[in-house]
Image 1: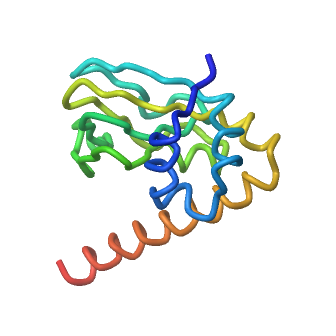
Image 2: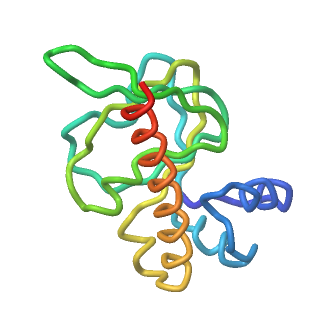
Length: 148
């Protein structure tokens, strides 16, 4: 199911770092292949180890990223509206490195990685923004390791 983008919704999405540099028409084109997903609290839109290349953007609600370590799920980060997850599998085409669990009912925008790559001009902008996001996360992790 394609996502119909109302002008206000498009303007809101264009303000997200993930879509920085995209024109409104490019976003509309990208969203024609996107899906809106409803995820109840406690459900997992993605699980560690799954093979999948979908990218998710939280439109409403809260979710948490968990990584399994020594048989225990460890909380990595909580996410809210405007934040994304699934970008590592999208970039690497590898299995999911962590699980994401809905803390509250979530409304998610799901982008198919295969469809993204069919739009090279848009994909280059999106991948640049994902690279920036991953760099910020790596810098934060480095700070945590060195500063305690």
